[in-house]
Amino acid sequence: MDHWPTRELPRFVFVKLEDRRIDLAIRRGYPGAVGDLDRFLARARSVRPPPSSLPLRDALAEALVQHSLGATDIGPLPGDRNALLRQPPFHTSPTALRAVATLG
Image (cartoon, rainbow, N blue to C red):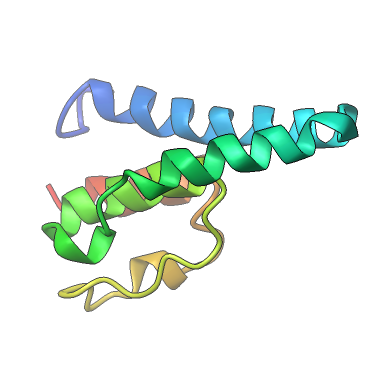
């Protein structure tokens, strides 16, 4: 982990991806909770800033947060010449971690 810009970055990426994995498991295991979960996640997404309004590194981190909250179409980011969000699979830990870390 010494080669990452901060020691917290790998943990941040893992936690956000784990949040999404748990939400999907709840959705599969408890179908009766899906409506409440959807309302909660929609509310949580509604107070987040648009990733396109942030500097690229922050925008990538915000895109990961919004993915963890169930966002499906985050859209392109200004200044993202490498189309990092469109490189599949952004939702996997190594890809997301590389995308955020490459921006220093």
